[in-house]
Picture 1 (tube, rainbow, N blue to C red):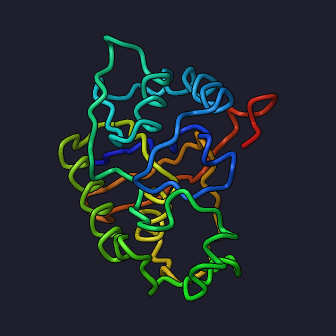
Picture 2 (picture 1 turned 120 degrees about the horizontal axis):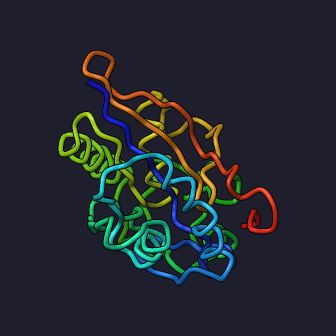
Length: 210
């Protein structure tokens, strides 16, 4: 039996545009972010997914889900376990500000220290455990089906690293852009697999920025 998860990152937000850490803080979609979601919507309608759409309960993911699906044909189910990692004091700050105030995080180098936890934040292990548990639970609820999951870039990255066996301290060699589409699936014998990551072909043209 194969269970497929069509996993989507939310559209561009004001914090994305300004280069600020979001985490559990929320920021509205920009006009571009809404346009990105609308560009993806026809593609999703062709995929024959379940009527239930799972999404993070943060506003940027919820709004993206609303733009992607057709009510009442689909039901959006909010899930706190699909939230972005809580970054504590980093939330609302830029990389430059973080590098100046918290040098141990090694943000400036582009290779963040996986062993460093910002004050008030989730640890990397706590975040990974939450994300893996959420994806396993959704797959169990929809065994043999194809289901849409709308979430965050850090969530997709953490789960893809887990499936691919890429350590948290290894460089990330894939990109998860706004409204990118990834397809991960679980088989009874082989377990979790990746079919593709970060596809943004629906954004070719004037909605591709951000």
